[in-house]
Image (cartoon, rainbow, N blue to C red; front, side, top):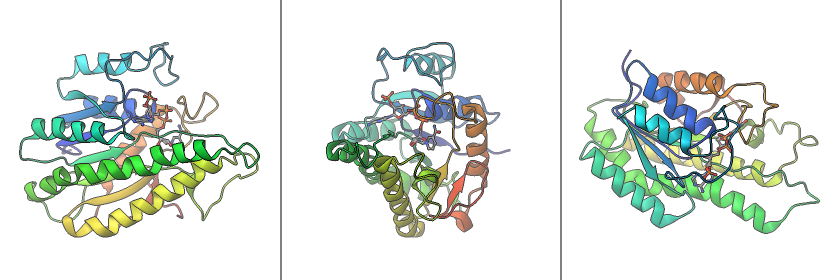
Length: 268
Ligand code: NDP
């Protein structure tokens, strides 16, 4: 089987789903040549123990250890709400890739918020929007030249992750069509931000398809991570195995889609 892509960048890769994406990509039989594992504090630790890392490791220690085992993994500082940080990451990645461009950008970094109507705080809501909507869009804007370069340089036709793609990690809770479990999980800031991120994905898919860049939103399932908590039914390994299988199957026909980790289509 061919590699999913020659180069992949993952945001928020120091723990949870992002860390597991990097781990499974690096361990795959045909790994990408370049895996840019980005996070806010690659030199961590930031002192907090993470659910996703299993044996009590601090935030970026697991990523540092993984990078030490795989020369394909490059650690890059990237805070998705800090424009100079995004631009610095883009320059570092561009330098590594020379003129071949970046094939696959996975906007995984995100934050949750459990605010109810009663407890809602406008600053908190704007903070969630900054991370879940503005951040991923700014990342795409700044990395667009590298994605365009990849779309042109692979010599491939049609749309695919091996040519050029943006994957936004979304959630079913952001689906207006489903509007799931509102009394149990009101989460106004998180749900509204992910619905907005979904619109961003649709707009990007429409705008970038003529440039040869695929855009898709993926719901990873309810996953045992710091965000998903230990209560979640899915392990991070299971979710990410599904996500990577779905990414390998994406094409012109699925660009602009909202899919779950098993490839099922979800209503926006
Ligand atoms: P975690 O809370 O375990 O990890 C979140 C990651 O995002 C961390 O690496 C965190 O970095 C990073 N991050 C947050 N803000 C920024 C920022 N400004 N810049 C860079 N990185 C940042 O969450 P999950 O792994 O569970 O979630 C990953 C994605 O999956 C999110 O987009 C989430 O909404 C989505 N999702 C998760 C579900 C679940 O059940 N777990 C369900 C549906 C969707 P740091 O360590 O520095 O804080």
